[in-house]
Image 1 (cartoon, rainbow, N blue to C red):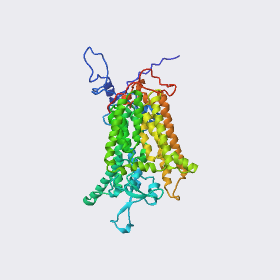
Image 2: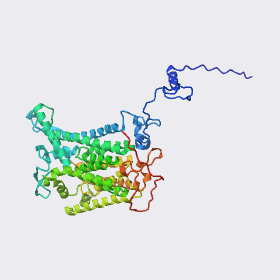
Image 3: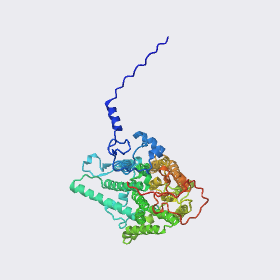
Image 4: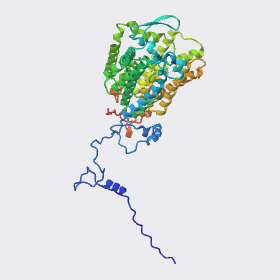
Length: 565
């Protein structure tokens, strides 16, 4: 016989006081809720809402869209949550985080050069504490420690250590043919005067050390320190302007802030001056200030010539969109700014001013270029006139091709895309590609190519070229790599840059594959950095083939509103 057993009555479980308090907090009326009798019953936050309820819904978040960043974010807690409020942080704003990352990259760059700043007494230890000091570049330290910097070498080579005024003062030296020639400052005016200003500050620092007891060092070390501080500011300006130009994809600029090329070449030469000018010109253009963009282009061309390539890019895009007036204002402002910087030197010291052009015309193919590789492989020496003609001719062809893409693509390219193609093409066919020139491409690549793995691969390979290149300068018994390693590295770097250009051209012809044109919630953009060109209709277009664009949008693209930071 089955005897029914009564089920035991469950005893009430004691709810901790903390849990009860939390449940009551979640279920009480909101502090800012309407408590009138006619108000619909609703439950909300237990505290008053913030007066500012804006949310940045347009910002692209890498932890949600970039697989590499998403995986890396697991170290700091994972991707941004689905219910996170974006754009309301008062302190950790994107720009401040990017500045912090950039300072970390620059710090690594500084430590990479610090080994070349070591000082030792001129005499042995028996000379006493008062012995004069010198740089410790013994046993080719600058190459074996990979810390070489043109900044240190140029302090004496350009006679800045004796207070020489660039473009006025000269010296004599032998050229490669053994002939004695008169030499002047070999850099454009803005860079040359920046060097002179830093040299004068270092001499003033030495005076303060001798007369006021201020802590000091060798004048060349002080010179490098002052230059490095200046270049740091210029690179931070580059990051700031590039981030604002990127608009909704601001976070992608972390690639420029932590680029391996910055670790190696931030303080190798003075190229950060020109990158800042280019970044500012793109920002000004994106904010529809053509004249300000022109001023920045002119100043950049007074530091390095490559910023002038932007005029070709903007000219082609403005011609296509009928924005000739805006381009005219940009070109006129660029010419005026360039003349304003150069005329004070050109008029009183024309020979010294021309030295930059003479020096570059007379120099042979750099070891980093395809011309030198061909010459070494085939066993011949370039005639300098033939080499110049070939390099200039190929540069013209590259610029014509870039302008042709700008005018003839099925859909108008973005400014950053065409700018990257122009600068990359110029480097590929130029007879000089100093290692630090690759810094020119970093901010442009971040704006033009939204592919993290591809960019990191190129930047890393390009930065690693520094190792076999330094090996070239070592004595035979000290070399750690055969010369062929450098040749292979240069070829691989060239192929990577060509691949980047191919990706850009593909996305120009297939704008549906361009992630920069994609916004959140299915929105489609034309050119976030386009300024007056953004969403502008075509006025003139030369068809370069059948339009096979896979761009899915059926309506005109949206303009990207200028948002606050």
